[in-house]
Image (cartoon, rainbow, N blue to C red; front, top):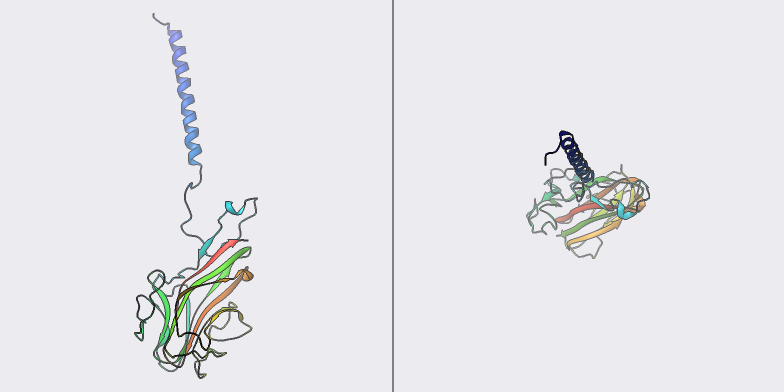
Length: 255
């Protein structure tokens, strides 16, 4: 049966309307899927010490809970980028902090522990008496809990430790390794009680002359909202001393 032109036009109109409705519905689905921000992805470059999250009724599970960092804390650049080194030694005596790999001390050629994480770590080495300091400033954001951690290890060739209340290698005997939190403008080569906020580690008389890589952790939350100076200091005037450190990091979480 032949349809009139009017009936045929009406059917084509209904079909066009149906196709249009389907296109709009599909477009809505696509737009809804596209508007989901970074679904299933994580930030590959977390900030070392983030600001506290803005209070918006979210729970801890709704926000970035942990951020780990300290740029070049593992010395994987192969150098002391983001770090500072200070030395005090007699004349042209050789001695310094070194970034090393393998199991041989960089200057004297002693066998030492391999870097406990990654390819590189930091160690002192020398050819004569001296003081060697590795340090950096770290900003600890307010409203956060902060935990500092690092691998610490050493080999003391002197046979015993001689801790003194000075970093001056000219004071005999003086053979020690210290880790301190200082005020941000403190003299890195001085032991000043007014500038020392807290002592994290110190070798003492009678301590073993060898410590294998050991992970140490410290709560720095009481310094939140401040910038502090982290210092690793080694003094030797008795014999060779390789003081080492690796994987320095700060983990920050909202409190």
